[in-house]
Length: 115
Image (cartoon, rainbow, N blue to C red; front, side, top):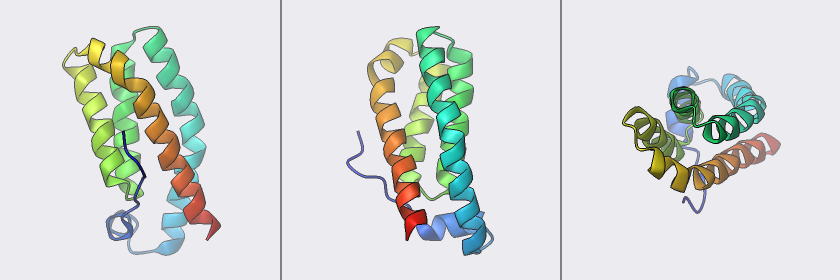
């Protein structure tokens, strides 16, 4: 579990053509997309639909690195690889914590936009 989500601005700028306006747009998109992802994560775990869980966590991994949330992106990658490798018991043990960290990432993005 991550104590806090750190947004690496330098990393984010690499993905946003060194443009702060684009970065803010990417953050807004990240926040908007999160509600759909939160719902889909819960549904895929409930239905044990591990292929779609892998796809969703892959998307979260990619969008998280785009906003500079490198540590959280690595956590999402771990979830993706667990789904790929059939480690479903590990997913069941960790997905709630992962979802909580995702909420922290979204909250951090919101806080950034407020400044």
